[in-house]
Length: 340
Image (cartoon, rainbow, N blue to C red; front, side):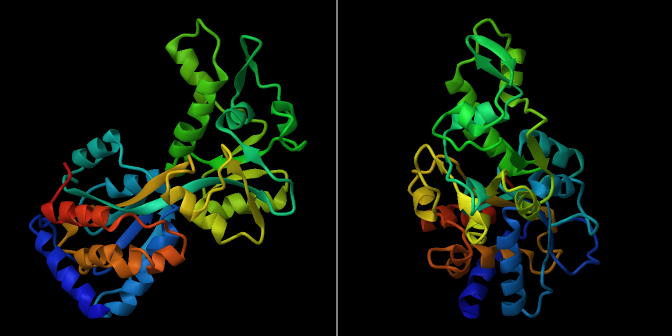
């Protein structure tokens, strides 16, 4: 395996044309960001350290997608991270922050897919959710009889009789998480549109109606999924938002909800049947390539078929692999240089 990976890494090493203008004093790859990507990156880092003993094992931290990209965009040099893990694409504002701090060579690596799921205590009732039901559970104001009113719902069954007669309690990702953005766009915004806001609202009022959450039953989790799980363990009525891969590692304590009648699995996400899924990324600071040892080798290793491809190490850990053709495109773009 190492021979093939070394050959692949050698090819990627040709991208080192953008050499950072700083003296290297650090010899360990530093990574931070998405809690969804964290377990995958941690596995790759450990495997990388074992297969390439000439390099130190990369250090992988969390902090959420937004937190990781904030660290990534802080500048170029030994005191800044080399890779930001992300469960969404980098935003224009984050690219601007990078550029203002001299980070001008940003290389995007998409490596697979994950689903976003609603899960509750395994001992509790089954949930079959739709986006409009979730919107009516989380929104601070909802339309009732043609008027926008303070959310009156206290139990799920009040929203829809088909739902459990259980108090509404939700633990959702904080704004520092990429999962939060997908939750908002794919679930809450879709549900808000379906609910039908009253006519005559200004653009600002309509946006607030879709994006302002109630404070009495919604808890925003700034930490990783283990914190959300702890919330569910302390209050069995809580429904939490997780990545599919995290749920699959905790099926002994969690029960997953269907969304629009589809059960989230690797198969339904890969087939495009499950409606709440997203690609996963990490971003490499091109100006650190050729300066921080092993950076280009790490990328090649991560994208190798044995690691992130069909039947690879990460699929066994819950990653939904992307088509090999997509990985080839990603690798070619990495070799070609910066994305901006």
